[in-house]
Length: 385
Ligand SMILES: Cc1cc2nc3c(=O)[nH]c(=O)nc-3n(C[C@H](O)[C@H](O)[C@H](O)COP(=O)(O)OP(=O)(O)OC[C@H]3O[C@@H](n4cnc5c(N)ncnc54)[C@H](O)[C@@H]3O)c2cc1C
Ligand code: SF4
Ligand code: SF4
Ligand code: SF4
Image (cartoon, rainbow, N blue to C red):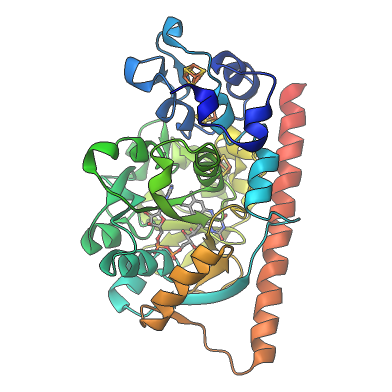
């Protein structure tokens, strides 16, 4: 099938066809590649090896002669814009944080999941409910695979989903031993490509805004197998980290934390180092820019505007997840999990309390989305100089 046959609307009307050479020049050499792997995973010449993930994690030509100059890699990249108008239309995007139908704090009603979850365990509770009730056959998530490392998997059981929950570092004996190149960014969308042989028909994808952006672009272009993604759960995302020689970092010294003290990390309105003693050390986000991936500092995406459901810790009390329902599909699936008793809303005394909660959360999300956009613009300008 020719690539034009994949395309619809705006994409179909493009006069220009791009290639990986454009992507390299504009995004990779331009410093905004977030290593999501979308271009390599969905390259039309994937099976004959036109592209590869290079040693440094950035995509590269494996054999340029095999490139079909179809432009798909360029179009699905979350850092390019040829499909922007199309996805804005499909997902009713409106400023400043995209369209949403409802916003609230919620948590898992299952204590095992609540304990395992990063915030309120809502993501895991929802996925377990959807799996056990036949809405999905699996979910692309990330799972711990040893000291400080996570890998992308498609979880197909409650046990795997619970294993994927949370962001604990408890099993790490000495964080300073973690080698260079560790990153908490997990390229979950690469696992979708590997799914075809498994014959899963309906999957959910959990991902950062760049990852969900790439999935949405694939869906707009009808690229197989994005058609099997029936739900996208988008994480709020201020930044991902690349951690090496953690103890040398200023913020660890400033806050008198040693690597042996750390049990886990989380981000809400600041960076939280959760210590084994039970104390949580709060570090301003500006202080941890030194461990952010450069592409994340140049990134302007925060609230996962195109997901069916966006989630984060920001705006909710400890033990709860902030949930932003964006699409009818997201609303239907979430409502089913609440109706079934898998997820519970935070109790509010009155409709006034509910309205206050909603506007507080929205204003915090808008504030952080604005901060991130301003940071992205600043870093892009610095990079250009
Ligand atoms: C890299 C990253 C950055 C984040 N930044 C912010 C932020 O700035 N502000 C904020 O409010 N919230 C942020 N979050 C979201 C927050 O940490 C929680 O994931 C969210 O509130 C859901 O909590 P939960 O308890 O409902 O999820 P859980 O039930 O614990 O489930 C979390 C799900 O996310 C999946 N996951 C974990 N790591 C990754 C990853 N790297 N890529 C893709 N999927 C992953 C897990 O496999 C699991 O399925 C971030 C999350 C991640 C992974
Ligand atoms: S074949 Fe298409 S998708 Fe693959 S590298 Fe070439 S232009 Fe990109
Ligand atoms: S951001 Fe993703 S799709 Fe874009 S160049 Fe980097 S790896 Fe490829
Ligand atoms: S900040 Fe988040 S959304 Fe942006 S490139 Fe990094 S991981 Fe992706």
